[in-house]
Length: 285
Image 1 (cartoon, rainbow, N blue to C red):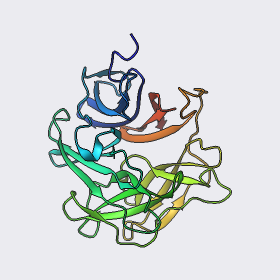
Image 2: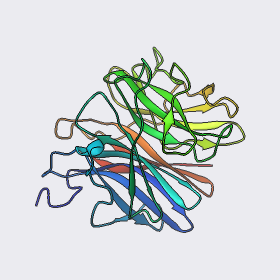
Image 3: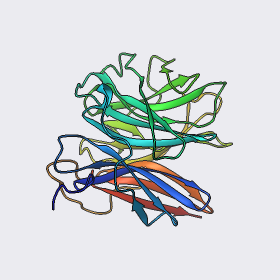
Image 4: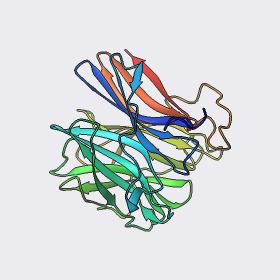
């Protein structure tokens, strides 16, 4: 019956990590019965394409900072600990709502609450979508995140931390802005956790223009100065290919990437489609 499963209304915006021969996914889940914006579900796979979900959510709204929903997970591992950022919906628009949870097994999680509050003029509306780089840069951890001055008009900022529990903004301005005349002319949002390479810090993001349909782009930041853009895609690296229609009056034809895995010569990008389903795009040499 409708609403019988915790993800009967939507299972989307997945983050994925591969360890040995196993693939693990965490995703945003919603059902028909509860007036919530999400719980976090867990699933496991042997090939990265066919996942078996855990029967119950592994993170649920149960604190003041996330009591109306746990949204949009992004997963990073440092040593033997998993760090999961998610959007905690506390029911107030003007809030810092990048929350952090940690785990050793991906099933049992300890919540640490909000790790970044709105601090600057450009992001005083709210901050969301924290994507943590697992390596230190200049002795500190860094996180790219989305900030809003007003709804849907967003930019990407940079925050630093000494302990991964408390982040601060060293800059007065964002590091990635919308571009007039491009696919991301109105807003931008972080995708999966960034990748540190010899070239720099590769970062996948999504952007939208006046049609408010999310498309996926890529940017390369400097290793020496993670706020400096070296390259940025002029066109989206991929766009929605399926017409999902409007799902219960909400997002239509969105693609929201939140998981990226390298598997041999392939790169697998996991994304949410239309606030409804978990999907996969593959790039292979």
